[in-house]
Every structure is written in structure tokens, then in C-alpha cells.
Length: 445
Image (cartoon, rainbow, N blue to C red; front, side):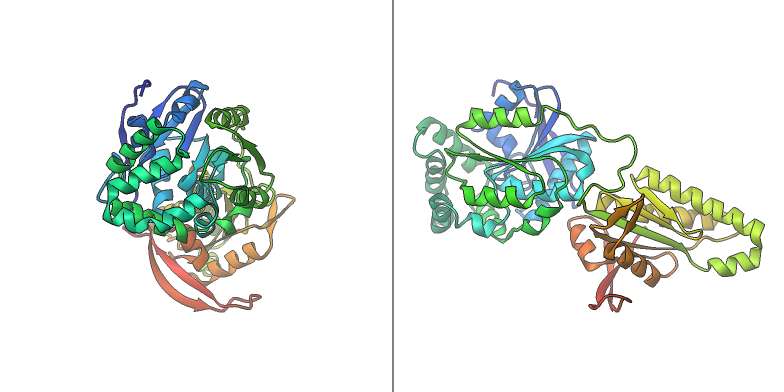
């Protein structure tokens, strides 16, 4: 490679070391790892020149090897969508990125979509190139992807033969020199067992239900010469993502130009917290002081109000630290909104720890219950309404002093994180037909 790349390491929440680097200067473009050999590794062996084209176009391009490949932790096996999102999050967090464009190619597309849904406040743009929403549909879409499934037994028995076949097939048998570089990268960057796991996990991946929740400017690109993409797979992405643009171009240079042009206009983060983007997914958090009425009767109005002011100070400071937007206060509780489910959970834990510290040091205890829910609430005149909000309130009411409760769908959104849960079983919720399975989030160290 002609641009020197210094390898550094990030650590995921589950302890996996992820190798990453950045090349070029300019607005940051993070490439969600394809995990086929590892983007950083493939660039290092000269098999991924298009990253250099992006850097030459005035971008700071961040590359990394996903778990199990290249220079990352090779003992960590490919674990599917959640593990790959965790890899991406670890690199973004290590670099301290506040605002960037995200690009997902091939197997990097699904984790890019999941990241965009979970962290919309981080992204200025999302670009999806020759990728898919459903892995099962992808592996049935083209002769190439169907051929991969047919050749998996060869991969298990003769890794060198398979990587040579894969590389020549991927280049359309048009570029022997590039195919040899690809084959060498595949062979040295991953094991046959890793690749078999990658294909199995990819076929089980489906981010179709997430597409309608993508709330950042999105460009879907089909490269006409690629054997990995068809209009059918890109059409699903373009039609389901709100306001997505879709183009079909010919050649790697055309793809790079489209990416640079699309990301040229930087979307600046708002200086004030955004309550709700139209059609956006939000995490709603409710707090409530346990025993508020009894406390006010015991202390009287003046002293009771002093305690409430401390409660308000702690809550507002913690919301500000974790990027939460205060929707309203109800005297003895708060309703807040977050663009990231992870930030909402970290805020809930920080709140409970702050109130526990207050209780340990002050004569009057502050015991608070917290409930969270995620969905697409309705915004009107600065307030939030709808089933998402109502259920969040109902969940908070089920919590005890010092507890954090979440429904099962929110736990799924937090998969791959290092939170500890206790299953609290199913609960009937007033106004909802189906029972809701709740989990307590354990926050005490």
C-alpha cells in the first residue's frame, strides 16, 4: 500500500481486540468491516485499493478487521450481527468520533444498518454498496452467491483451492493479478472454519425490520460489474429506508465518486438535543420517586421541596451527560427521550448510582424507579405521545425502589452489551392486549 497505515487496537465490551487504522485526511468515513479476510488486512496485502481512492478523494477513511480475521483477535469466532456491531462500536468509541459517515459493503451492510438505527445521532450519512438486508435472500440472488453455498464443502476440505476459486469468481475471471492478491488475502486473513461460520451467520441475518427506522441520509449503490449484487437486493434497501437515494453505477471509480459526492455536504449535529426526527425511533425513559407522598407528609412542604430540588438536579445533570432530552417533569418524576438505546440504558444506570450515592451521604434517602421502552412515539408541541410512551410509563410503575425495568424488545436491541439482566417474567399491562416480558437491569457493581 502506498499510504502508510499504523495499526492500533480497540477493545469490545466482551473483551475482543479489534485492529483498526485510518488513512487520508478530511471528513471521517468509517467502513463497516466486510469480515471477508478483514478490510484492514485486505488493504494491507494490496487487495483493496478502493480504500486508497476514497482517501485520495479527501476523506479520512477508517478501516478495521472484524473479530476472528486479519490482525484482530483470531481466537474470537465470527458471531453474527451483534458481534459485528460491537466491533464497529468499539472502533468508533476508541477514536472518540462524534459525527461521521458510515459505509457498509457486502457483509458490512447489515451491521451498518443496525448501527444507524441504534446511534442515529452519530451519523451524518449512511452509504450501502452491493449489500443486503436479508442474508438468506442474498445467498439466493446471484449465480455467484448460490455458487458459494455449493462450494462450502470444498472450503472445508481444500482451503487454498476454495480461496483461489472465490477470488477469480469475485473478479469475474477478468483480472488474474487482482484475483491472486484477493486469494492470498483470503487465505492469510481467515481460516476455513471462520469463513463457514461467516456464511452460516450471514444467511441467518435479516435487518429488514430495522430499515424503516433508519433516520439518517442514505445512499444505496449497485455496482453493475459486481457479481455480488443484483437490483433485487438493493431495491429492498432503497424502498424500505425512508427517503433513501438509489443509484446504479459501473466500476469502482464510479462508486468512489458517488460516495464522495454524497458525503460532501456535512450534516452538522444540532447544538440542542433533537427530541424526535420524523418517523424516528426513540428510547423513552421514565423515573419516579418511590414513597414521594409519604416523604412530603413526613418532611412538610419546605423540606420536602428541598429534597425534590436535589432529585431534579441529579436527574438533569445525568440526562445532560448522557445525551438525553428532558420531555417533562411530573414533580416526583421525569420523562426523557434518547436517540440511542445504549445511551438511555447508561443514563438509567448512572441515575440509580447517583441516587444511591446521595442516599449514602444524606439524611433523607432518594429511592427512584426507572422504566424504559423503545419505539416511534408521536411528537406534538414538544411532548411525546402514543403506545411507546404509555408502555414505558407502565413499565416504570412495575419497578421497585432502585430498580430499572425494560421489555424484551429493548433487551434485544442491547444484545452484545455487557449489561446483566434478571428475568422478571410476563406482566399484564393496562391498555395492552398481550402480556409483556420484563427484565430487571442489574446496576450495582
